[in-house]
Amino acid sequence: MDVLENREQWLAEFQQGWLAHYEQTGETLWKIYNRPRNSTAPAGKRIDLRQSRLVLITSAGSYLAATQQPYDAANTMGDYTIRTYPTTTPLNDLAYAHDHYDHTTVNQDAQVLVPLRHLEDLTAAGMIGELAPNAISFMGYQPVVPRVLDETIPAVVDAVKAEQAHAALLVPA
Amino acid sequence: MAGIATTLTSWNAGVTRLTMPPRATFTRLSRGSTIGRPGDTAQQRRILEATLALLAQDAPIDPVLLEEE
Image 1 (cartoon, rainbow over the protein chains, first blue to last red):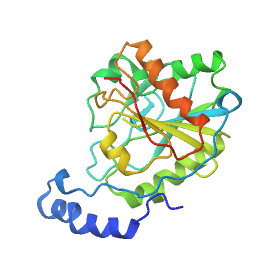
Image 2 (cartoon, rainbow over the protein chains, first blue to last red):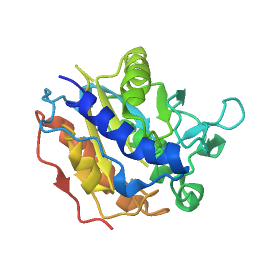
Image 3 (cartoon, each protein chain N blue to C red):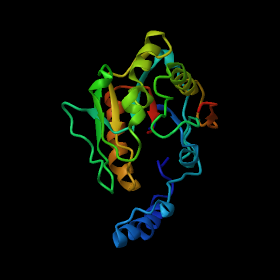
């Protein structure tokens, strides 16, 4: 099953609409942006989370401030790379490179977008079997959907496999 | 992600619904506060637990609207 059902149609509409307008004017006109859409949700088997390893995937643009490169948050065409960091990371060690949401709340309480301490607590309580050693992060401003399909998603899938996770919690910003 | 059970929570039901996720909860929270209001540990835990609980069901399932704002 394709992640996006109508990739070629989406790309044509994007090139003729939002992208053409941007290239002609320099303006990002969101009212003409064609949101990706599917007609069918993917099927999948239930799991027993108490016996499973869970990985956190967040699009908050979080990264390790001291050791990792920030995302290219100012790039109008987006950033399609990912970062991983240990789930034991102190939340104060994270920074956020994402220009498309207000950081006031995440700066007050990182768990609104990166709920690592809650997930640790739920693991200790037995609701989650195991938390993957690393969380997966990207910057969710990614207007060029084929680049998401060809770059971000394969990198995320490889990272999930490396974590040997059975389940993933996605937290979009 | 074939073989990996996924679940998510979103404050943006309109846009998220278009992508047809296999499991999802939706709230009426604000952008930047996906898991709950800052400092509101009880709300954050409710949203997380409700979202993770969906993993116990075969997908796809209809998104679940949580009365959280």
